[in-house]
Image (tube, rainbow, N blue to C red; front, top):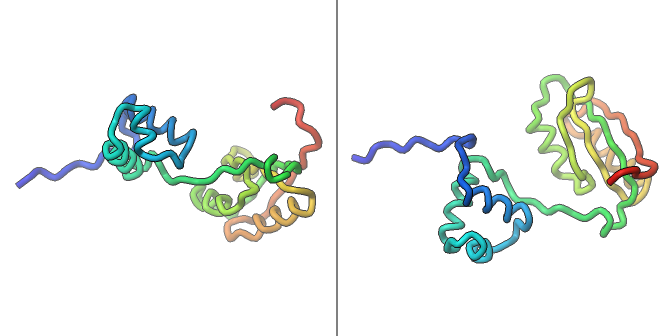
Length: 154
């Protein structure tokens, strides 16, 4: 009878090939296993097995589309402090914010707000609508917004 296998922890060390796979996926999450395999000198099957293992370990949590706000003419920008109900876990905040394509980035933070959210929208009306939708999310208690007037760096 074979010995039971111990699951590999998500924090177990990644080898150089795993890191290269993650780098390539980060650049183009839609690249085929065959395309990635050519770049890391593995077969498409071997690439799939490795990526499946990375997903099982929780290293790869999912695949998403990242929109270019400028291509959508979303030139209105704001930072929104989100204040959540007591004991709202970061995973719930993330789940709520992921549904908004206008969210460019989001962080949990120290201090009074629970999260800081970077938004891009077409105009003030669009921005206001997104903020209102965020405020209606179940874990959100209130928000405070700062609209960007001009970008100094970046």
